[in-house]
Length: 68
Image (tube, one colour):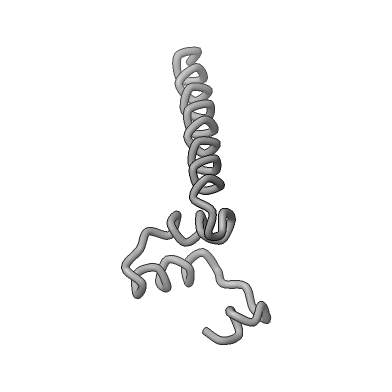
């Protein structure tokens, strides 16, 4: 854990999920904190961006399915 905190190692996605399980938080919560820091407004902006991108990806996928 200390090597992660000091930036000496980067966790795999699997390890990130395990760490979040121990912390009893969703992995996206930890990633949001990593990107937004202590700023609730930055977290709100980031989550709004994620929602827009998810909607775009999902609507694109739905368009692809309707063409086949």
